[in-house]
Structure formats: structure tokens, C-alpha cells
Length: 189
Image (cartoon, rainbow, N blue to C red; front, side, top):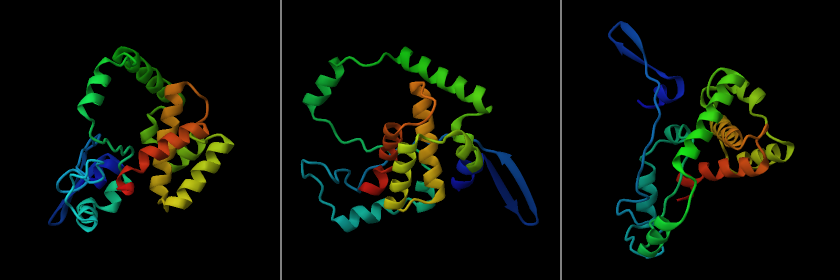
């Protein structure tokens, strides 16, 4: 049910001999545990799930749905000491991040009339082409991980967005690598 609005920004409802289309543009933000107990992969060894149970748990998400999730990040549990350190560690102020996001969004709207996420395959080819080294890295990753065309283009659009946030004219190999890392979380467990 989520695939259609995530892909097309519309949903079609069919009843009897009638059909109706509705706008359904959405942004999916989701979280899940890596296994039923929530501790799979944790160095503490608290997980009591077998590898088969953890794999079966992850398979509850269909491949086509996972393919449509642009950014997938694994967030391991932090120890109390790490939490205390992070509270005092300086970071980029929220206002500065918001300004960079607004600037990148304005750049995208000026360049192509829409955000990178909304680009078609052809537009992505034209507007998101990376540097030669970045293109080589992207091609190798796609072959190594067996990406679908959808996954390939999603990584490329994320890399274009990372480049926009940095003010770079083309996605670099480092930005492609970052986008690839965001793609691997659900398949790496």
C-alpha cells in the first residue's frame, strides 16, 4: 500500500467498476529493531535470537518497499559514557544546518524546478552525473550489491543532495561513498 504513494505521490482506489486517484505525496520516516528482541548485532551479546529469526524478522519488509527507502541508517545503542560525551560535544548548530538545507533546496528548485527526490530517471541522468571517479564507484557498488535500477537512481539522487549541501557542482566519489553507506543498513544486518 505504501509503494504507490512513495513512488508516484498518488494513490489509486478501485471499487467495483470505478477508480479514483488521490494526491498522496508523503515522506516516510520509519524505525525498526534489527530482530524481535532488539539486540541483534549489539556487542553486549544480549541478543538471544538465532540468525534465522533475525533474518525472518527483517524479511517482513518487502524488497520493493526497502528499495524505495532512500536513506537507511543503523543506529547502534550507545553506552552511558558515550551518551554523556555526546551531550557535551560541540556540533553544528541547528540554525546553521537549517540554513544549509534551505540553501540546497533553493539551489535544486532553481536548477530543475523541483527537489532531487522528484527527478525522473532521465532527469537524474542529466542533472546528477557524478565525477568520473564517483561514477566508477557507483557502478562498482551497483554491481557488487546487485542493485535494481531504482536503488541505483536513489543512491545517485542522495549523492546529488549531499553535493548540493556542500555546494559542489558534481557529486564526488566521497559523496557517492556516503550515499552508498546510507543504502546498506537494511541489507547489512
